[in-house]
Image (cartoon, rainbow, N blue to C red; front, top):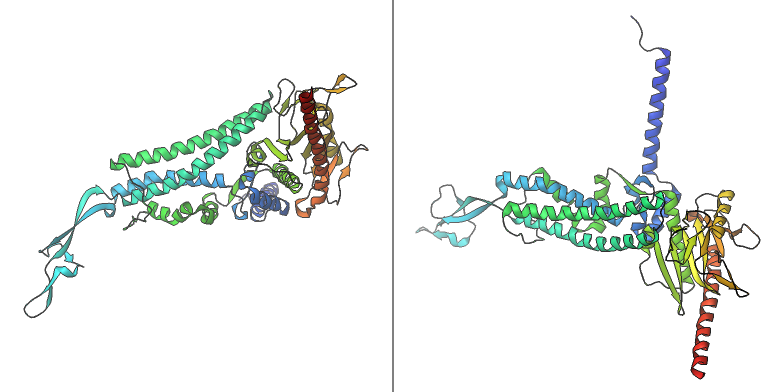
Length: 474
């Protein structure tokens, strides 16, 4: 007898088993125990807005839903998919199960196929004062469906519809604002625009599912169903209806119960933005907070811009500055920020801060990176030469180009102060580590922009006032 388990076969088998086991262990460990760095990013971003966890235009990673990583939009869309996907079976069960058909309660003096009545008036005493039934209760089946379960189902659909309308309005604004910044002609810009349009299509698809579910129920009963928040009694006993009842509380009170529901529905994992993009958004949240500490205010919700790119306008003492998030600057097309790209076809900084300046507008750039590599951090200086203002400045009566004043990186470094990369301070790194957060370095960097914007912005207002006064005197 030949032994099939030769030495090469055993080595190969052991290798395959080891690789598979290690991979499974790694994936399970990653899902069950998220990296503390990522966990801190997730916690801080979710405090600001859970929408910032969504991939949006960026690469994804899978993490455990136990870590509170489910964004509110993801939760809503998944719950609508769950509910609308269950409706055909719910309707089919109502049509085939006798217990869910209507019945007529009939009171009769004949006890045949009847039972005792619960009404006191249906009993009377005989001559010996015994209490005997005068009327019996007879339950007669009717071919018509009991609409109470369907009316409750309409109530659940109404709740999802109301939530979807809010998400749809908010997300469409995010998408439209982002499309304004994605004006390049490169394949990257085209891919971003396609992703944004797909996000819009996804919302339309979910809306169509809700409308189809309503139409299906209306065709079943032939009349318009009125919503009812009352749990139907008797409740249908089929497996589909029992499953709906088990998850109904999550649909009615999603903030309190939906994470557990989605953990089961999504098999314990969910896709969120990849770590570099979570870090970029986290830096954006901290950047806005630093401006707020210095007295700047914004009136529009910045979540959409942080999520998909766009503009956040800040105001203080009648001075305005703009933070453009992920603007795609092209050499061939004017960007709303007032800046264009030169030397290369397209460039894409993370944060372009536009302020008043002596000759119009000036710019400061912050481009976060998750690496501590000095070469990569120093590479952010490229924006000093690849970006320029559309309008020229004037020196000695001659037109000159206006480039950004600073192009800095942010990196998760353990440092108590900023790190200069050149003697003029035009490029450097702000230490921004989620697990060792120190606000002072960022605040010092932002304070320079604050002073610059107020100085030139206020100066322009004074000049305008002086010019108007002189015009009046003339």
